[in-house]
Length: 314
Image 1: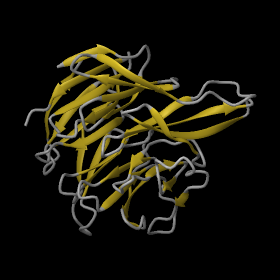
Image 2 (image 1 turned 60 degrees about the horizontal axis):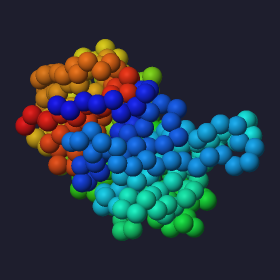
Image 3 (image 1 turned 180 degrees about the horizontal axis):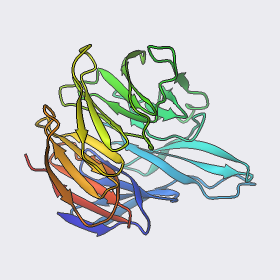
């Protein structure tokens, strides 16, 4: 296990690059930091631009993501312009050079999550204000003034997208919000499956099983394992956390791991919903977690600015 003080305030976002580097951001920050977790060394920082003339506050980071190819880092957030409104922005960097490749993708509101598509060059999916926005290119400097917005689920209601995930087989995109999860066809971005759930107090995460057949849907302190392609299939509920779940993911062998602001990471049997074990790293509430691309390590960020990385037991 590796632990270090990465920030002064609560760590709200964390992501793994394909090469094992970590990116993190803290509450109220205007930048994302990139780390070598083995050496606990900060390698780089990527900062959102300051407000234009008349702006009152520095930009605030709300989300981040690495591209699947490992070449790009996207950072989303917003500034307050003229003291009266938010100015949402997504900026994309080329990691190898530190060059800004897309300086100002403009979603219609402050983004709550980011996901690079599997296209080459990649696009970007941005759930924002209940809608799923699609930027066809994440690397074209001219892209992004008006993204395509997808906001209809199978029941013709807003999907309430606030978190987003891509299935390992690249067939499906999932969004989760309050109070429903939606599975979309990844090629057409047409909504295919819908699951209402109890209205949780936060933006609950979602994650696909390694074979793409099950979606983990968090809402409040619970996580539902939903076989979305099997109508009538029983939903397995993971119940035991005392405070909201902020991260959920499947291990390579199909078990589920969750991180909660109750300070614990728990491992579950996906077939029965039984809790198999838990970790308490002593760094307070956990607001984010991420798996390495090989699924062998996991990282989580705590309320006191610490980041912890540990080996996943297989």
